[in-house]
Length: 156
Image (cartoon, rainbow, N blue to C red; front, side):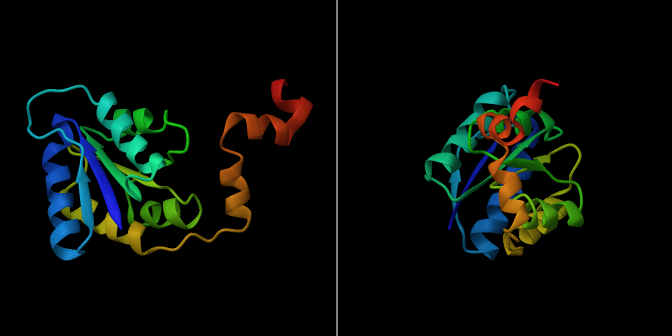
């Protein structure tokens, strides 16, 4: 398994803690897409880069970090095929995989401790996707598929 990691300056230290855990404790290969310091950078290119790595198959999963996790998760989700979830609890970490089969996680370096991010990442990695009705819902995420599913009622 290979996990892509990316952050802006606000999430740099959290990204580094996650990288250390994934490589040393979980023996997972990491693709570090930057940033590589706490020097101020814009988060969107990092969210896009990580999502593209996941969607293209360069990485199996991705984790992105910025100050709050909000901006970088929005950026990642602009890439078709990315399902990036901002996580703030054990329950969210489990359900984002179990029901949403999220292929990316987002964390905030100013809102999440390294211990929390590591715990939530482990829960996400260890939780299976339930499939079934949840797969049908994931299939409805892309707009064309939603319009087809709801038909003429879409614009009402």
